[in-house]
Length: 218
Ligand code: DX5
Ligand code: ZN
Image 1 (tube, protein in one colour):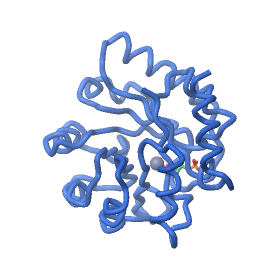
Image 2 (image 1 turned 90 degrees about the vertical axis):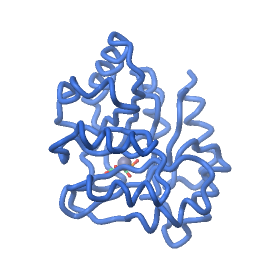
Image 3 (image 1 turned 135 degrees about the vertical axis):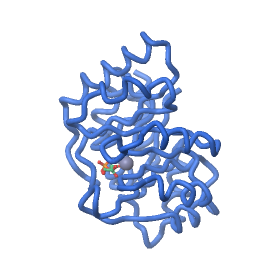
Image 4 (image 1 turned 60 degrees about the vertical axis):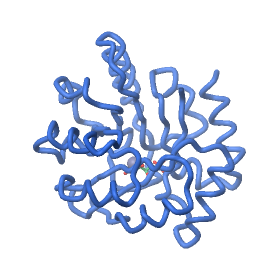
């Protein structure tokens, strides 16, 4: 099943409830929430209080992407706030196995994100435990950056590994996804597509999501 996850980082945050309602009506599957701490990435965004506020107006899963150091300290706060999927960055996780299992023990889906320069091999011993792997197709920190094409073979290889090892992890692709590249990303093996500027930055979000779905289905 292919899913589209609009990232609220590019929404009008002063009108957040209306913005998420609009993309849900337009057919979004998940709402992607980018959490940045000003340490792991050079930007600061939102925390559990915003996730909690969103939970009251959003009926679809909240896909929370933690671009933070010391994620272990904050897992419970995000879970209590209503995160349905929690993804941590492998580069910021010293005890990744412990972190992943701490997430899963709370009944929340666990994901691990890889920066563009991080090899797939870093997941060799944790892949069977993951619900999703997030391939970053930009360097995390900001919305509106260019998709890095060298990530296409990385997505393809991850898909091969998951298939060969008969694992369940889904592949989420995050950064620079637009109507004109989402089809290619889907063909290479992407299952979940995050779109920030490529969705919220367009005038007609319904038309954009409809066109994205058409591209994915080709
Ligand atoms: C990047 C974030 C992304 C970002 C995507 O640091 O993790 O989720 O919001 O935004 P676009 O689609 O504009 O690259
Ligand atoms: Zn993200």
